[in-house]
Image (cartoon, rainbow, N blue to C red; front, side):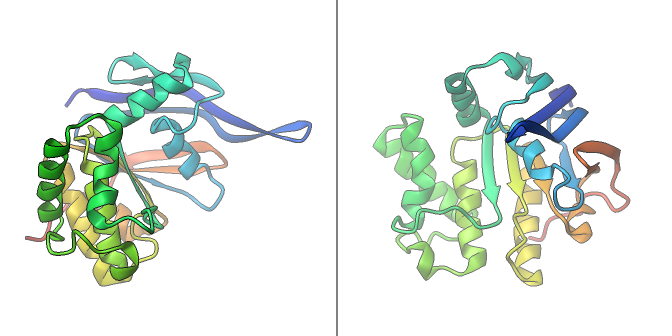
Amino acid sequence: MTSLIATSRLSRRYPIGEVSVDALVDVSLCVKQGEAVAIMGPSGSGKSTLLNVLGCLDAPSSGSYMLDGTDVSGLSRSEMATLRRQQFGFVFQNFNLLARSTAFENIELPLIYAGWSRAARRERVAQLLERVGLDGRAHHLPSQLSGGQQQRVAIARALANKPKVIMADEPTGSLDTSVSQTIMSMLQEINAAGVTLLLVTHDLAVASVMRRIVRLKDGRVISDAPSRVGPVKAAQ
């Protein structure tokens, strides 16, 4: 595995009135291609901020961030947006689906932004719906789908542009245990196919099936170690 993500003394500060609040402080981290890394910590520890910075949704205030050989720290907003479309897929706790768009249309959206032809989009979305087991739900709105089905649509959307990295922020946080296990099995299968997985979670059972667990406190990395359990074979 080669290095994909490397940060050195990465910090993110937010101005609050006349003072600044440190959300991340001197974070040095290396993630290799194909790794599965869980990010844990108490509320307010900087987990989501770190994921946002690594996913080019937010810019660091200081420090360096190299993504697959590109220095992200000095990129403009438009350059970051392009890199984000090319490299990342995002999965969120609350799914973030467009309420008035069907499952097919939600998955298709990043392909439209990326300039895929209509025929190529239709083929790709059909493949993804089948991959996540929702080929019979293509024309359903999010309100017509269960929480687990909505998250599967979100995963399919995240995979649309064939990203190198999936960024998942509490992807099982609003799901019951059985559905959470299904979603984690799906994410593990994606990781086993070579896609790097970074996952924010407060659930140790979820984190334990990842290869590494990075723990944050007050914006700092306090530990970075292999999981005691490690990856398990995804359900067939």
